[in-house]
Length: 165
Image 1 (cartoon, helix red, strand yellow):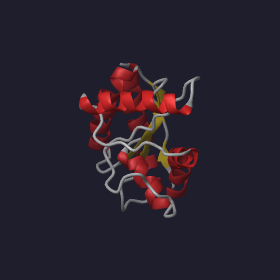
Image 2 (cartoon, helix red, strand yellow; image 1 turned 90 degrees about the vertical axis):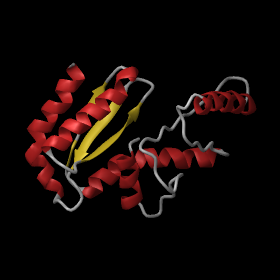
Image 3 (cartoon, rainbow, N blue to C red; image 1 turned 60 degrees about the horizontal axis):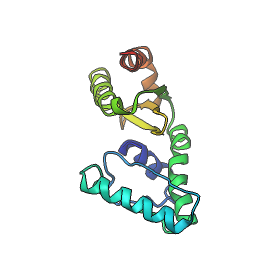
Image 4 (cartoon, one colour; image 1 turned 180 degrees about the horizontal axis):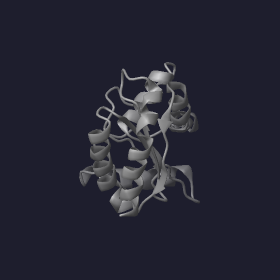
């Protein structure tokens, strides 16, 4: 989930408690389970998390301490589309990419969209397990939400040309 995605939730759902006071550029919600036990799943997950931290892939992490805590994390993710609807018009793109190409795509498409619509808010969230991304574009802060519709064709071309390449 991009920082902009989390900002949408923060803005549109004042009752929602986000896990980080200062939002990172990207947040990953990772769930793990196994057939042995909750304790075994937790141990395996924490080992994986330590490797990711030591490898420089993770800056900060919060591990759910209960099922309710886990559900609260998932609720944040699930509120992104509703938050976008509350904000008004946005250009939605449901795309799929090889996992290794997602960071380059996000950077390149974002830069190209910025060239067309400076300050555009790009709301990215999805399902990393299968490479699916919801890559949505909203009007810049202070601009009428429907104004983003003026750029629909140009932005769709940017997104889909990069997906294809």
